[in-house]
Image 1 (tube, one colour):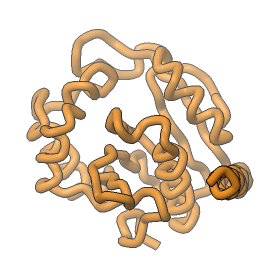
Image 2 (spheres, helix red, strand yellow):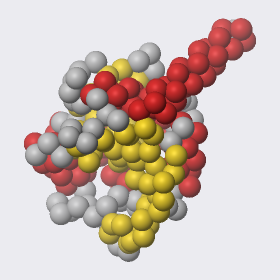
Image 3 (cartoon, helix red, strand yellow):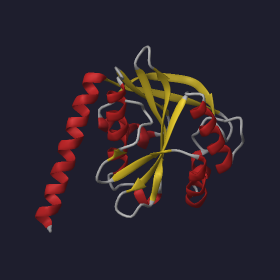
Image 4 (cartoon, one colour):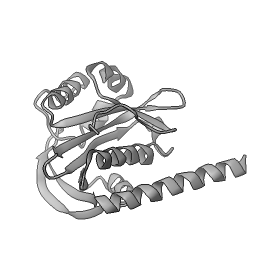
Length: 201
């Protein structure tokens, strides 16, 4: 299974391989402007076009696999998420650069898309799935830990931010057996919420 293979979707969200034409979604949503506050500095500049060019260049080199997220209900743009630090020999990969539109937050898209990414990583053969998150991004760290990722440490002054300054980052990861357990727990929680919704209606 390739990380960029089609079919990465569930009943809530669809992840399509990122391509240059998706830059219009970023421009219309204000995503790139918001992302510069926590993204590493990139050589191509600080604009939606620069971000898209950077991602596409890394994809051509096999260093990153990017996705654009869409809501299944209305096909609306929901955000972006990537795989990077892809290492087939050591069977490890990271989920990174995830960002969600304001409309998609708090509605299950984060959990659903992260679960799809974890599942794809395991199908690809990952023994380890990691996350590197700016240490002051407490809400993102809490969300990852709720999925079941364990913090393994903090790297000081790990990268230069696009907006200036340097970021400490928190390392989180799941090993393969932990990821399988996490996916089962996420699936059970989603089924319970769906059942509760049917009962209320």
